[in-house]
Image (cartoon, rainbow, N blue to C red; front, side, top):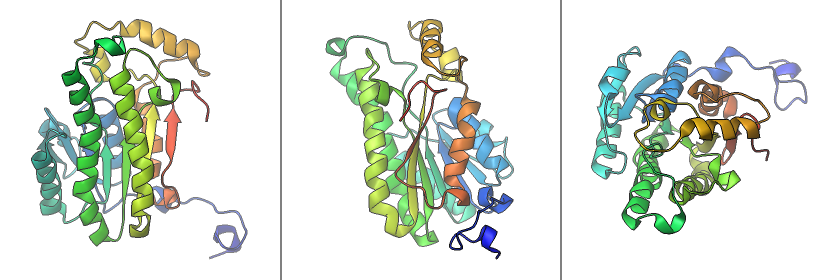
Length: 268
């Protein structure tokens, strides 16, 4: 290896295709049948990963998009479903290298003052967004340890940094995911399991387009665009490269970090 490519030689290290290849790896994406999850799954598959798509609906159909793709119907807040999801991946491929915890509750949540939020709704949001993330991590880590390492990418939210009102339970849940990411990264570092997160801004996803609630998302989008440095809507495809990078060999010294992708609405 020349000094130009030797990390210990003080020279310039140039990336190669191998730095971003996921050939031979198995990746699980929760909430992967549509929206942000589907876009990230597409990116991981293009990088060479074999895909396991987990979702409440449409997982089997979505998995047909990928060579050797596997679809699993799963509720991420159900420990039995999550264990079965990982068992299916292991039985089919013998390994789990990547987990993207994308499944979450957002578009069905009505915006309202914090003192009007029902306790049961608060519990439901946190069961899906926080406990679902915890269960996914808990299920894959033993297999990643046996395999010598792995990558976990949790999808949090830019709302955590901006203090968005009228969605306190959602913002609190995504803040918990961010904190979980940092603490788990510290706990799993010696196992070569890297844990990072991606924090999107308001994204025009399938869920937003098909939103059943009474929230005026056109208005939300306009507010978001006005606050951004880059004056346009955000789409799931805007998140893909960062998520794939965090799963790739090129990110082998990155853990406990959060990449905010919101067109420059928040700087940190």
